Amino acid sequence: MAEIELKTAPADYRFPTTNQSRHCFTRYVEFHRCVAAKGDDASECEKFAKFYRSLCPGEWVDKWNEQRENGIFPGPL
Image (tube, rainbow, N blue to C red; front, side, top):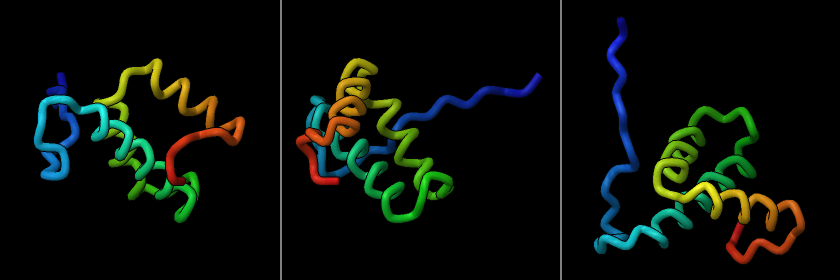
């Protein structure tokens, strides 16, 4: 049986406190910027996807995805 290895986003000096809200948002934005620049199938963007998925609550991601679809996302994409 293969061993499962669990990982989360690495420590980031830009976010030294325990509140990871900004870290979550930044990783979400970095993923979508990467996809916009390199395309949907870019393997180098997958690390950002893993990071934001491990940091962000699902409800936030759903809301941000809906906002992006409607053109009202507040972040810089």
